[in-house]
Image (cartoon, rainbow, N blue to C red):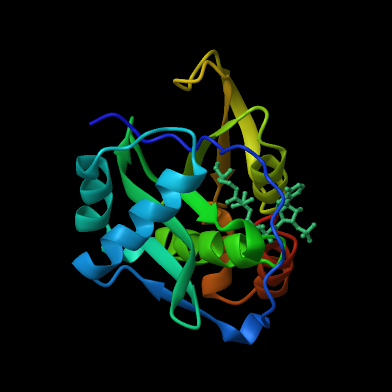
Length: 202
Ligand SMILES: CC(C)(COP(=O)(O)OP(=O)(O)OC[C@H]1O[C@@H](n2cnc3c(N)ncnc32)[C@H](O)[C@@H]1OP(=O)(O)O)[C@@H](O)C(=O)NCCC(=O)NCCS
C-alpha cells in the first residue's frame, strides 16, 4: 500500500465563518457515516486524488487516528493518520489534513493534529512523519510551529509535479541514566526540568 500524500489544494479567499472555539466539537472516527464527510473535505481541498480504498485503509485500520471537527453539525475539518513499524521504528504518519476555507486561521488544524499526535505518543510512537508540498506555506508554518523539522526534499513527489518536504517530529526518548537516578529520587528535579525544556509541545 503506497503512503498517502499531503498535497495542499489551490488557495482561494473565503468569507470567515463566525464561531467561537468552544462551538467546535472534535470527535474521532465513529463509523461509515463519517466516511463521506472525510472524503468530501479531502477531495475538495487536497491536490492528490485518493480512491475509496485508500480512505478505507486508513479509517478501518486506525479509526482512533482520524479526527473530525464539527461546527453546529457541519464537518469543517479532518485529519487522517496511521501508525506502525517502519524500518525498525514505530512511527506515526499524518496522511491528510484539511480545514475548510471559511474556518481557517482559528486553530482547528492545530487541535486536530495535536489530538492525533497525542494518541501516537501514548501508543509508543517514536516519531511522526508526513509529506507536504514545498509550496504549501500554510502547512509548513503549521507543522514548523508544532516542532516538525524538514528531514528530506522529495523531487517531483506529487502527481502535479511539485516537490515535497518530508517533515518529522521526534519524540524525546527517556534517558536511562535519569530513569535509574530517579528511582532513588536523587535527580528528580533535573528530570522535571528536562521535561519542561522539551521542544515537544504536547
Ligand atoms: C493547512 C491548513 C490545514 C491549516 O488549517 P488552519 O485551521 O487554518 O490552521 P491553524 O489555524 O491551526 O494554524 C496554526 C498555525 O499554522 C500557521 N498557518 C496556518 N495557515 C497558514 C497560512 N495560510 N499562512 C501562513 N501560516 C499559516 C500559522 O502559524 C498558524 O498560527 P497563527 O494563526 O497563530 O499564525 C488549511 O489551510 C488547509 O486545509 N489547507 C488546504 C489543505 C492542506 O494544505 N493541508 C495540509 C497538507 S500537508
